[in-house]
Structure formats: structure tokens, C-alpha cells
Image (tube, rainbow, N blue to C red):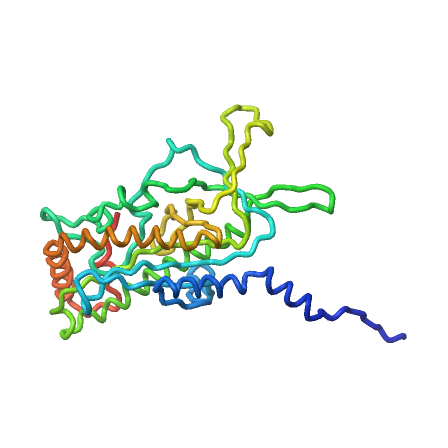
Length: 325
């Protein structure tokens, strides 16, 4: 019996460089570098636990920034980015909703920490309502086209192009929503530190605002579909864009129900403008918290008093700290 000989071509250095440059590896690095220039602390390849599949996973970039509210040492608010970075050689196309069908939802602006709820007029309201996210946050008054569907393009058998549901983006979205829920839950678990006797006498806020984000190295597009029952090429308008507000629905393993998430999809070149938009939103929220300081501090005191009155020391105060919509 003859010896089997396997012939293969070893990749050369030039091909290695081309492969690396066309991948998403360097994109993660560039994104993290830019975030640090804007004052964010970053962690790349951030790990989290996937409750659905019962295993450890990771996402590309975790970043947060400290925005002081009541002065140094009083903690503050934290814009927190949960990012996936994707390399695409062909455009990703998003099918755009009619503007009149857009329904702003305050709870899509996700938060964690203290105070996630505010005591006002003898009842708790969400901090989202308190700072009026409906009028100041881009999730609620879209500054970019809004979509719930997308497609990618494949050159089939070297003969023709086909459009298919963006499975890769769908998996990316699911990763981000799971990572988001994990970050929120961990943040509430870490709130136990504020119930130490040496901490609870301080005036403080410790509140994170989350921004799930997909950053594409290549092009993204908005597809506007005409309202005719029988569509033709003239009923499709395709426009290049740098920012899509994406609204998928997924089952939440923390809420035990299907909920709507908000994910921003942007191009790499748009990231500086995107960060400036977040900065503007955080400045408005900061100003509201400063102007209403007495209400905020009373709410923090009340929340802490309620947590201290629990019969046993809680391992996770989420049920007492979080506002349930």
C-alpha cells in the first residue's frame, strides 16, 4: 500500500498581513484606542456567562467613562459601551421603518445602580422618566434610521448575487443582549459594597447608562421600501449611512419574557460623532441630577434604608434597587 502524500501551500507573510488587515482584530484595537482618547476605560475581549447555553463567552470591547455629578469622591454617572466590532467586505443593508410607526420606549434606555428609581410625590418613578429620556435620548427620538431587519450579500457560485438574512448580525445582536444583561446583573451585585457602614453616610450616585453597539469596518446602508403591493426595483431606495438604530426582540433570561432592545449600528468612521452624541446626553442627565439634587439624595437615602431593613444581608440587591417597568 503506497504512502499518502498531502500537498498544501503554506501561507506567506504578505498573505498573513492581508488576512489580518481584512479581519476585525485590528478594528477592536483601533476602537479601544479611540475610546481611551475620549476618556473611557476599556477592556477588550470582555468575558461573561451565557445563561442560555450555560457557558463562558466574550464580546469585543467594554468601555465606561466617569461623569462626576456632585463633585470628586461622590461617584457619578457612567456611560457604558458594550461593543462588537465587525469586518465586512460587502455592505450590510437595513430595512427602514416608517417614521410614523416608531414608538419610543423609556425602558430601552437601560440603567443599573443607585438610584435607578426616584422617590417623587410619594411613589417611585424610573430614573429614565425623572431625567426625561423621551426628549433627550436618541433611543427615544431617533437621530438615525430605525430598522428591525437587515440583509447581507453573497456571490453565489461565482455567477450572481443573493441577499439573505444577516445571520452573523443576528448572532452579534444576541451576544450583545446577553452581555448587556450580564453587565447589569453584575453591577447590581457589586452594589453590596455601598451598604458598608463607612460608605452609606456619603452623598453619592452610582448609575450606569448602557449603549450596546455594533461597529462595522465597512459600509452600512439604509433600504427604503415603497408602499406598493407589487414591488419592483424602482420601489427600493438604497442610501449609504453611518448610523442605524436597530430594534431586535429577544427572550430575556433575567426578565423571563421577550423584550425589545435598542442597539446602535455604526461605521468605524462615525465613532467620534457617536461618542460626542453620548457626551451631550450625559451632560443633560448630569444637569438634571444636579438641579434636583435634594430629590436625588432623598431617594438614595430611602433606597438604602429599605435595603438595610431586609431581614438578611442580601447577596444581590437588584430586586430592591431596580425600577420595574
